[in-house]
Amino acid sequence: MTRPAQLASTARPPGGSPRRHHWWRWILGGVAVLLVLIVAGAAAAVKLQPSPAPLALPTGTPAAPSGPLAGRWQVAAGSMAGFRVQETIIGMSNEVGGNTNTVTGAVALAGNRVTSGSFGINLTMITVGGKKQPQFAASLDAGRYPDATVTLARPVPLNAAFAAGRTVTMTAPAELTLHGTTRPVTVTLTARRDGAALQAAGTIPVTFGNWGIKQPTGYGPIGSLASHGTAEFVLVLHRAG
Image (cartoon, rainbow, N blue to C red; front, top):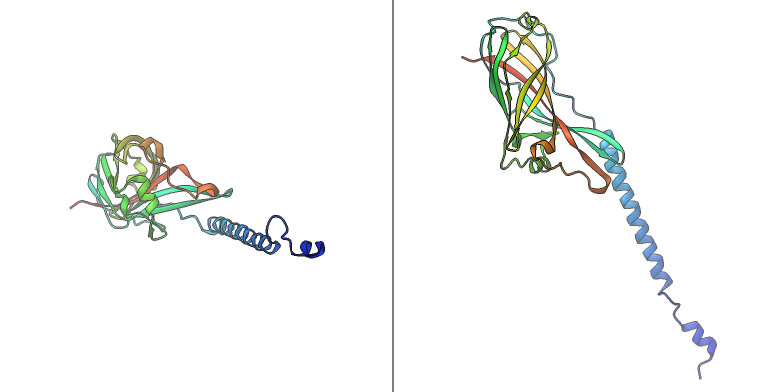
């Protein structure tokens, strides 16, 4: 007959093996540490990644103006357009921006005003840090609506200082066509003459929902992208032949 002491020594403790509990604690602890490292790494990337500089007029002193202003001016090499939007991860914010040099269009000047103007941007060519962003293209539905267009809504007077070669700042009423929708916008412009060329840099505030655009995908539960951003451009214009 087996003695009670022997039975007690061979009985399994309730709840399973202590060794199994020990390994589960290690696994759960490792997963927790991994999650902390992933979150911290993502936050550090946002904090340490420098925000791209806004598109602006070229640096340096422009050349003295030459030639008449009146006529048609075409978008030329050196022009760029893109966007800027705020991203937030675990309370830390940064601005992400993308751009493209695939910009076309023209403006017309007569007397002391801009009588008409329109330029288009190929959204499928926008890159962030030199790389294309599938999330951005998907949010804009760039496959169906590959182009955005900015069109002057009515003639805009030009300050006499502009004709003399000074840098001027102004606002202009325009229409922005994006995601198959056209809406009125106000463009804030800085412009000047540079020798035989014209240069203009501008910004347009864009609330994505106003154009039926799905908010860009963020970072799940740890972060997000803002529901609004800024369209920006810098145009170099040469007189049409």
